[in-house]
Length: 385
Image (cartoon, rainbow, N blue to C red; front, side):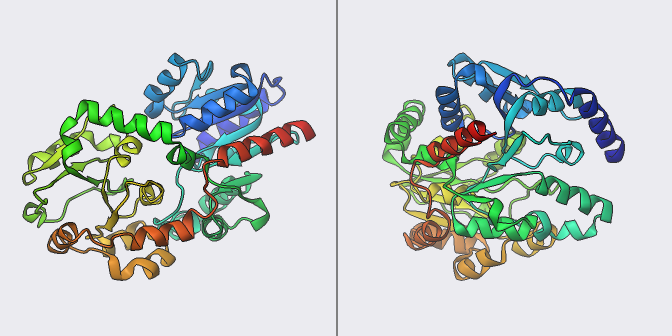
């Protein structure tokens, strides 16, 4: 099926290869949370210069951007809807991608085109690419296709030398392709107006959070892996001065409700019109496992502690894999069961220690101006092409 699909992509690309470009930039969007940078793009280049090619999962976010006048031109790309993807590629000189797109292995990039990977995470705890254990169980043809996608990017934007190192190892790309200019998605956490607006939004809908210590539990999304809480979850003890907000991936919203229904007191959910990024702005403590959300949280002044609740570490290492450097750095601070989690919550486990480690290694280049620097680079690419 994959071979046939990619063959069709190649054929459609051949037919559309010489279509005139109508836009300067095509932004391929599969994740929310980068609205500030998208607004910067359209403000700088103009709304008629930017095309937003998006997946159905982020349609609501795209509609908000359109309603606010941030974007004007959009194109929905559904899986196996080949023409839409190729049209997006052929529509612009510079293409930005926030994810891995297998279709790129079948695209013949034109000489004047420039592909930039901006990714969807500020750092990496989970393994991916060649560091993912499952990669070595795939066929040689699959592995070659993966590398073709990795090689298709002219530039990969990162916010630290550490993340550059991860991409070099995980995607086997040259260090010359790594643009260490800061991570645009992190800019909003330096924007005091945005942070205050986010807090006001949460407190308006949930005024009780003003008087409570907000603990945010946001585990990573486990693609093709069932998410199950530990058997001792019922023994969780949420401190009396706190409330624990559970935020799972949007694909798991039904499970989120079931989880809370079977949880002890002071465990709640929050409507998904409040984004995870907004919840970070009111959280005192973040509980996560292998999610890059920890790297974002550490940038906020309200961040007091991060707890890595890795009760399924052995299984996760075998099925998905984690970065060896992460395990080495935080091994003594990993929480393996609910009894240890209770102690960590009562003692505000790790204080600023883990947060400082994260910022030193993963946020060294993030200062609130990464988006502006990337736009400067794009301007140079368009001018010199």
